[in-house]
Length: 328
Image (cartoon, rainbow, N blue to C red; front, side, top):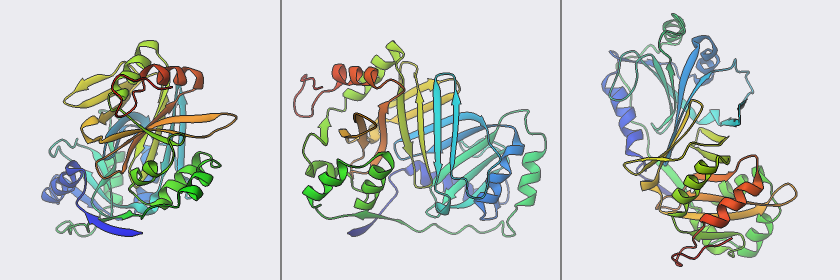
């Protein structure tokens, strides 16, 4: 396993931290490095707009934060035709900033949670005319004693593993469920593309990037549900819904459903892979977007109807290196 230091792939993440540091003690206040204690107080703030930052995506949703328990790391909610799962990796949450007045594109009366490398994990913005003084009370209760200094975060170290033992990798791949597969890929290192290239096409096969807009447009037209999973080191989101037809703006693909907005940065996508692995009673097929370093950006998979998803794939997938050639 090789460990390499790289600059953050997302300049926006770096800029967000620097904007907060520049306004520290004025429009931005540093809170104590106790993210769990602050998360526990969010239920008193009323309606929130929660934004999750990822290298290749951004997700905004309107919600009321539940009263968290000490060991609660998974938040789930269901709405009409939609489902949300939010997996928190709280040990990687580090510092918290309170934005009192607008700073760059950061809204007033919002909380920003960062990991130890200065990358934003989530932003909680209080909806206008809600929460009363609960935001100010929470900020005062959790205020950090030092409002003058905010050191530079350390560089992030990415793990790049060497060539895998293909036979053993395929054996494990063919026996794992959702959680087991994620654990397997995480243990192999951050450059997933190395392993996808090593296994046979029945496990992972590259497809044309144009497959994604074609599939999402078709799903929007037919109102078929699609599950979008994305996230960062601190939180993983999976949202399932019949998304609106995609709206494109400067290389970003915007999907919306009932107050949830998903923005996929297609400019960050260097490759798309069709993955197959075992599921409950059948083979599960998904599409995964990777960046230029082979790191995970997002996964697209079936909503509630696996057959509808397979129909979308059969009409949309174009194999890499074979223009116009559809694949099942």
